[in-house]
Image (cartoon, rainbow, N blue to C red; front, side, top):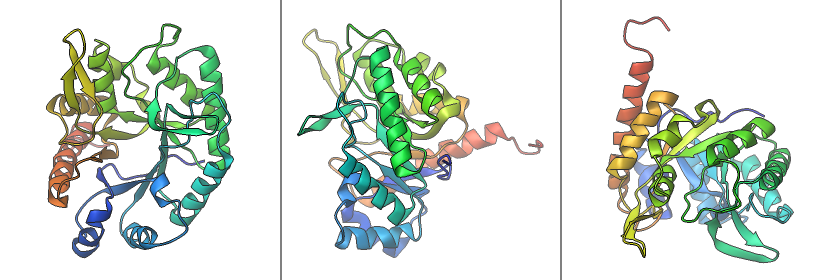
Length: 289
């Protein structure tokens, strides 16, 4: 199983309303990401456009429905459909979430948190092993955004993710927006989270904007909304992250209230500039690598 090999550039989520513009203009975007579940039909315009776009851009395939953290068995039909997609498009990266989203026959329209215990760790490790075996590729596992903590948790989230990667050989997807959302909601230090993250396992970074409200106690409550530009504090955490990781493939997520493609391209250009600065710091001009 080979690690992800997306270019260390800014990527964007591929939205149907932008298909034609992307194909006509061929903008300088590093890669595009699609949610796997949106392309599990056998044919139709989505597949026709995706095939044309993949001919010109690297592809990141991002799953939202495997329920890797669920207590029950993985859906073998879902795995089969994922395998079909991977064989059809040969994406440079496949990723999923450290979360659960189903129970028995019911599928829930959310990515729900799980307690970090040895038993949960064993279950997630078994599921990641099953996914990688079924798909025939190395996957990346994304840190979640959370709004509650479990009293029964006995393992720190970063240690939990590191143990999964160590035991399964999977990579990690570091969602910097999720770090900020969870840290603010639980009154933790997002920079300390990044500082202890196993960055040698990271194959991709995600950025996004969040919504903000207050909880019953009047404290800040951040919502992982994906409906606005990357928040300034998230971008500051991103540049801090790059000092540890060096330049990595970085996706700007904008899934709700999707703007004109030009707005997304502006966000990608800002991220590309930060990645170029990180590359320069890593290999200054005149220095022999």
